[in-house]
Image 1 (tube, one colour):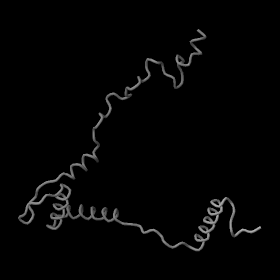
Image 2 (cartoon, helix red, strand yellow):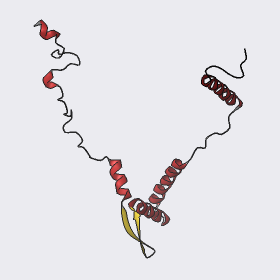
Image 3 (cartoon, helix red, strand yellow):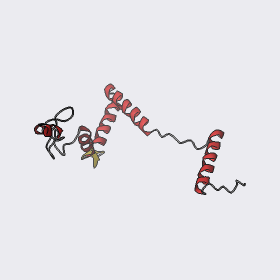
Image 4 (tube, rainbow, N blue to C red):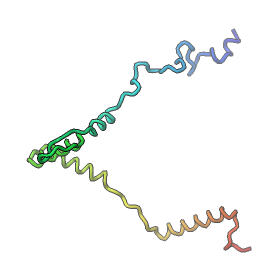
Length: 138
């Protein structure tokens, strides 16, 4: 009996379930889970909006994406005076403007920042030179 207790593989306890109830190698713990290759909503929506359709614009047939067609229809409804379409369009414009705002990086450093950068560069140059600095004389 003592040998069975000391055998680590047969020991059952905290975080050590019995062998018969452990997951088998190569077998999922959730057999009825999401099937491989199934797509999430965002992927399906993106693919669908990128699909192309043929439309008539000013007597000409043109090929545009479904997203373009939906936006054109929304703009046309808003231009015709549809209040709901105007509200949706204004929200869409605000969202698009917020995403397109580009923050320009600061190109000028303050005096303190310049001094700090100079000190960092000096230390870096000293470490590259093996601690021998030409300006330092003994």
